[in-house]
Amino acid sequence: MVLRSVDDVKLSIRRIVCTEVNLVLATRFKEIVTQLSDSSHVSQEQMQQFLCSAHKSGVWIFGSFEGDLLVSTVSLYLDRHPWGIEGRINNVVTDKPYESRGHGTRLFEHLWQALPGICPIGRDILGLYKLTLCASNPRAIALYEKFGFRKDKEQEMRMDVTRDLFSFVL
Image (cartoon, rainbow, N blue to C red; front, side, top):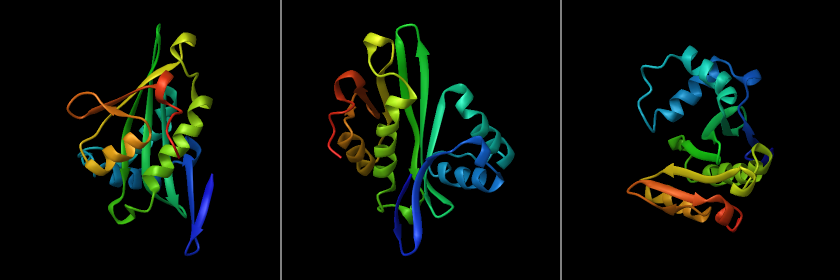
């Protein structure tokens, strides 16, 4: 999805799929997620392998790009149970020089639009009924609350998908 052009730089959001994963993209992904947790022990080849195999294990990774440069990412992990699907959002991070440009908001908007095509929604059909994520950054918490998340525990935020998913205002 091409969003717009700023100073002749094409902004886009897309799912990161194996066919486009190379060492350059894997290295860039590693650089960005290292801002959240230390991944220095992970090689670029291991990161490339993770990105290529993620979809097989129920992980959907989306990236926000300025031109061909990955600048922001969000990952959706889906756990299927006999009673429905639980989702966990991880690796929500924007590279520091690209913060405050709306990348996080656009990633969440894209994820929300894509969710019904990723999995069924609603406990009554054994679909997605809960989303969780951890947050401690006040700016991030404000973004997540805009999309319907509410604080549950110290740093965890939850959403009852069947009640809250589409009640946010874009």
